[in-house]
Image (cartoon, rainbow, N blue to C red; front, side):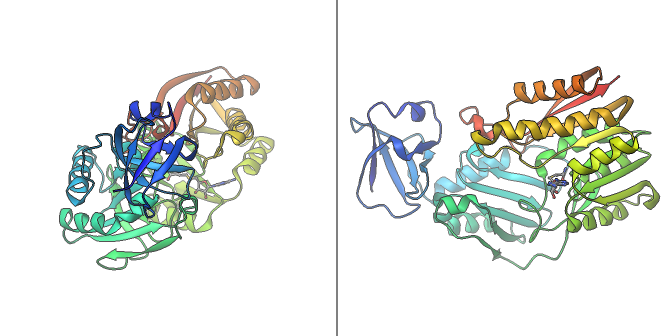
Length: 391
Ligand code: SAH
C-alpha cells in the first residue's frame, strides 16, 4: 500500500482527529496511489497515524477513514460504519431523514438520505467515489426492496476532479414526486431535480417549532422552497401564509403540498420573487405579519464572502423586523458554516436596533439530529437559527 508522509509538525490536526489533510501539509508520496485509493498517512518520522483516501486534485488531499493506522479499509469497514451511522438516528418521526452525514459520521464525502422507499446518495469526494460499488451493495443488503438513486451533481465534485453524475444505482427510476411524511405533514419531494437530494431535511425540527408557535398568526415564509415551513404553520393553526421563493417549480410543489394536507386554499398565497425586493415593497406598502421566517440560501461560501454575506443577513433581518406587528415572531436562520452564532446573533441584534424594535430571543435552533456534529469536526455545525419576539 502507498504511504503519504507529512511535513514535520503537520500531524497536529490528525492527532486531534480532524479528518482533513491539506496539500500543503504533505512532504512526499511513496508509491503511486490512484485517485480515491486508501493510503497510510505517516508523520515526518514515519510513524503510521491513519488510513485515508487519496485525492490528488483537491486542496484537501487526504480524508481520513480511520485514525487507527492498523484498520483495514474494506467492505467490512464500511458495513460497520454504515450500520453505526444508521443506528445512531434513533427515533425520528419522519419517513425522510439523513442516514449518513459524511465527515460528521466518520464517512468523509458520503451523504445518504432516505425518502420513504428511496435512498439518495451523494459521493462528494474521490474516496467515497472509489468505494461506491461496495456502499451500494451494502445499502441493498440493509434496505431490501428500496431503490437507490445518485445525486452527485454538486460543484464540490469538480474540486475532486470528478464529473457530475445523476442516475439510478439500484432498482427503478424515481417518480416525478415521492411523498414523505414529516411529523404528520405530507410533502412531495423531487428526488431527481430538487435542491440538494430533494429536500431540506436539516430544518425538520425548526419546521416543528414553527408549527408550535403559529396559531392564529399571519405568516410570511421567505425562501419557502417547497413550502415546508408554511404548511407546518397552517397545520399549527396559522390564519394565512404567504410562501415566497424565486423558484416557480418549488412553488408548484408548495401548492401541491398544501392540497395534500387538506388545507384551505384561501389560507395560502404564493409569490415568485426576490425576497430582498419584495420585503422592501411590503415595507413601502405597510403590509405586516405576525410571524416571519427567513431561511435563505448559503450567503457565505468562503471567508472572503463573510462581509458581503453579513450585509445580506443584516438587510433581510432589518426589513423583517420592520414588517413584524407588535408581539410578532421572527424565525431567522443562517446555513453558512463560516457565519458562527456569535456573529449571527450580533447581526440579528443590530437589525432589531436599526429597525427601532426591542426584541428578545425565545429559543435557539439547530440542525436536526440526523445532521450530527462530530466534536472533532466543528465544520459540521452549519445551520443555526433564532426565534425572536419583537415588542
Ligand atoms: N425553507 C426551505 C428551504 C429554503 S432553501 C425548507 O425548509 O425547505 C433556500 C430557497 O431560497 C431556495 O428555494 C431558493 O430557490 C430560494 N432563493 C434563493 N435566493 C432567493 C431570493 N433572492 N429570493 C427568493 N428566493 C430565493
